[in-house]
Structures are given as structure tokens and as C-alpha cells.
Length: 267
Image 1: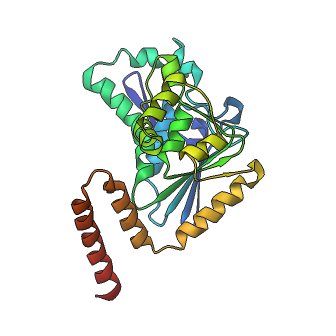
Image 2: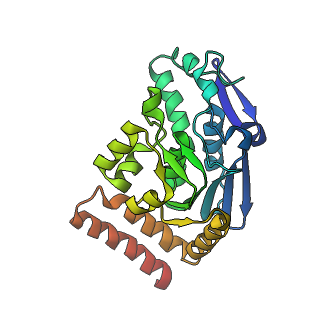
């Protein structure tokens, strides 16, 4: 179930109503955006549901796969959110604009939580991207640690062209992956980045034929699961913190993590 806030009240709705599926097979969890008739467009309820999945993720899960049903990964924000009527039961950007102060900030923060947890050091997240990954869809792919693209994938940061900014945690990973200048160019032109270019500039780890996407994700998940879980968590934690540390600070962090691993293995 996911909690959706609108008009000052909250209600519980099912993942199916939101257009999501969540499945767990051993140590692998799969989140499927399942509104193919809407090209897996996202709403406030989508983001609330993603956050709830993260909160309730079973402890045994080590790999999380995010995929889209049908020909598109996600076409981004449901365009009904731009209308005065909005999405039934969820409101619109117009109704959100009436919020004030902390309530307005909290509304956006709640949406961001649906993306933030995919970076947790105890899991590795994989985006399996085919077709369009636009705006919120592109940011969802960027929220994952790794991206495998079908060769028909089309990435686009559409928000600036719509008068908005990318606010679903996508700006930092985009800059980290491609650098500031390229990130500015991609966002402010709102152009499409194809799969081949995405791989060349660091937005994808692998590009495969659409029919090979599922197997490529399975193979990567299997390789990740072959690594000791605690060592994988500690290593990801080190890598995530590296950009914010000096070399000396990173060496100290490595020592702390390694002492814990040696004690666990041989103490």
C-alpha cells in the first residue's frame, strides 16, 4: 500500500492502483512501472509508493531492479498534473502551489524519498531502460547505481522545457556521471540522448538489443550477488563517500572499513 496526500488528508491505495508491481525472488527485488498505456507516466502516488517500497524492503534483498512495462521505461510526469483538475484523488501542480512554507518543501521532499533509497549502500540498484526515459523517468534511472539500456533507449531531461527544474534527485548523479558542462547542455536544451551516446558519456554501463535486456539484467544481478554481502556494502559506502573526502580522509575510511572486515572474517 502507498499513502497519498491530497487536500490535507491521506489515504491508502494499492500498488496496482498506482501502476506499480513489486516482486521479490530471493535476494532480487523487481519494481515494475506498469502503466504501459500511459508510457509509465509518474504521479504523486507513484513517488509515495516507491518510498513505501523502500521503507518496507525485505532484509534479504541485495539487488533492486527497476523496469518499465511495455515499449517505454517512463515518459515522465503524468501530463494531467499540469491541468487544473490534476490526477483524480491526487491533485495537481496548481493545488501544490497553494501550499506554504514547510508544507510545500515537505511535499517535494516526500516525492524525493521515492528515489533516494535506491542509493542505499546495502543494496545495488539497476535500471533496465528501454524506449523513453523522460524527465522523472530519466531521474529514476539516474537514481539507480547502474543502468543497462536497450539500444532503442531515449533519455531526456524535459523539466526545464516545461518551466520546472529536475527535482527528483537527478541533478547530482547527472553531474557526477557526465560533468557540469555536459549536464548543463543536456538539461537546458532538453535534447534526447540516445543509447549509444549514453554509454559513451557514462550514463550507461551496457547497451544491448531490446530482446536481450532482461537477460543482461539477470546476468549483472547474478554477478553482483556473487560478492560477499558485507564487503559489497562496505565498498559501496566507501565509493559513495570518496568524492567528498581528501585522499588522506579516504585512506582513513578504508582503514576503518577494512579493520571491520578483517575482524568479521578472522577475529
